[in-house]
Length: 288
Image (tube, rainbow, N blue to C red; front, side, top):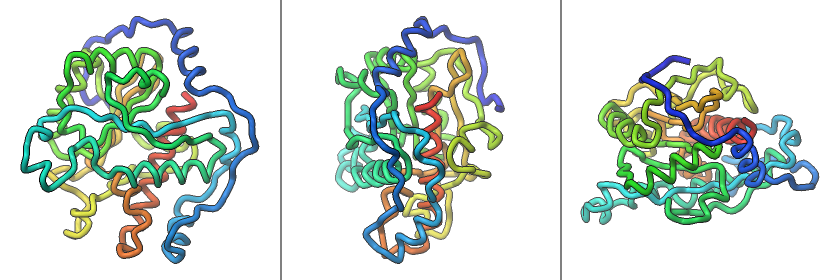
């Protein structure tokens, strides 16, 4: 792992026993046989190609785990821009609900993990403590409030995992670092290279993928906003567990959202890549 930003450590202030208890309560053991099924899609010709790229790999060994896609509805500067709201969704809602529906469906069909319906929560919703995994899309627009910072710090201290996706280039990176620095002051952001177990915990991913947003794809490129090289970065806890997973210069959400789009057959290669990488990230978070 390569350090991106370093300084003194920050103590999370909660015992390991408390963390394990919270995670066990959130991921309570359930009975049942492994769900091992072929990936099915609406468009059959497209389905065959996507299924080839996201095969089943010993899915039964995760029997007893549960997972819910929890999209966080956060505050952002863009939500105050009338023109932004007129032409696009608010940043927190980008790719919803198709992205999480498709990803949840795939994870359920290729593993024995009990996958629940996706939900959207705000950070002041008390139900947030019932789930160990949160998703922020387009965090280059993130504007955390003091209460948000306290909640997310506590969430991480209890053993939760936060996944960030779909932000690009140096300007959005700098804004993101300033925001998350409030949550974990003093923690360094590190590079997760392909020798990290997260790249091989389910699928073997030899190269971190750059998934283009559909607009970039139509323009014949995979990058946007000057974000030429995709990176998987992380913030680690005191035990070395990635408690923040940061997908930068890539758009995983578009890969899931458009996986059933028969009219974009050239995009299918990115669909498979986005599923494989995020399924690895989810499984790693649930088992570490």
